[in-house]
Length: 118
Image 1 (cartoon, rainbow, N blue to C red):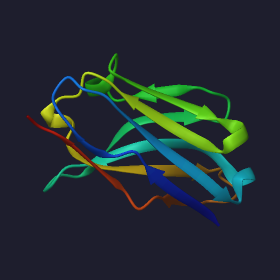
Image 2: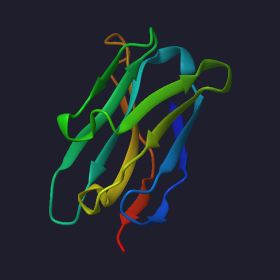
Image 3: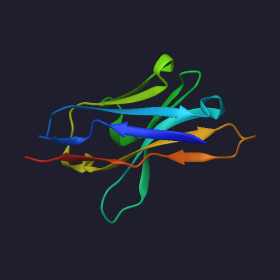
Image 4: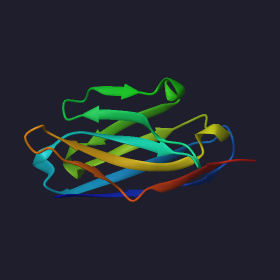
């Protein structure tokens, strides 16, 4: 089992910045990649950014150039630095851990609310 605990959400004005953190614990060895997804009211959960254990990253087109995903392997923590935030970034942000195929599990955090408004 893998446990994911998110922090760092909140309210920010348009153009502002926030940093989300996701700390993983438990069966860390099984994790192949971690990432962030978001879900706005009435919409599906969408990919924001992912990072593999080798450091390869992937971003949704809507956040490229504004968001940066990074990781601290010593702390088993993944971060999402969000800059130039827009109202359309408002959503619940979920941390995700994808395990190697032989483990066949996907884990989710509890979610943290990000609200961008004036």
